[in-house]
Image (tube, rainbow, N blue to C red; front, side):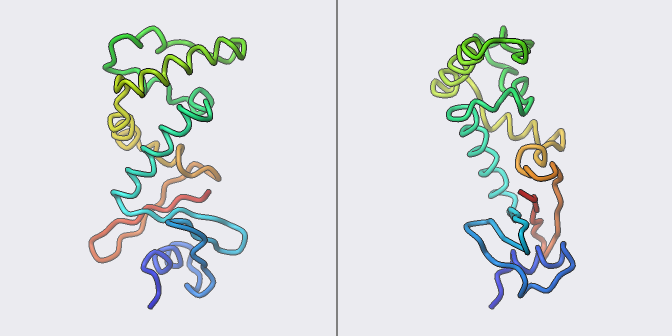
Length: 150
């Protein structure tokens, strides 16, 4: 029996499903291209995981231009909202990231709100589709599957 996500990706790419491999959980390979294929809840969870990871571990938050999503409706972080880190030293950027990290650990940043904001602005593709920033979808049996090239 073929994995439904392989069938969905094959439909999207207009290729034979036998040409697609399940590379890892929710990640599929066609030729040398890789894709996430996610159901709605998996999409939400992947966004949460990715946002927490980039903030707490990699510090890519400013490069992804999502810092404004992190700030809305949070008390002590309002001053970060309009900081542009492009001209700041590495150490100053790290100070800002430490403030954000503390905010997440203490629950000051609502990652769920960030994900909903990205969804409402139709910007989840910018976060998950690292290849082209595009969010694509295919519906099958009443379920929408979201496809991101990575």
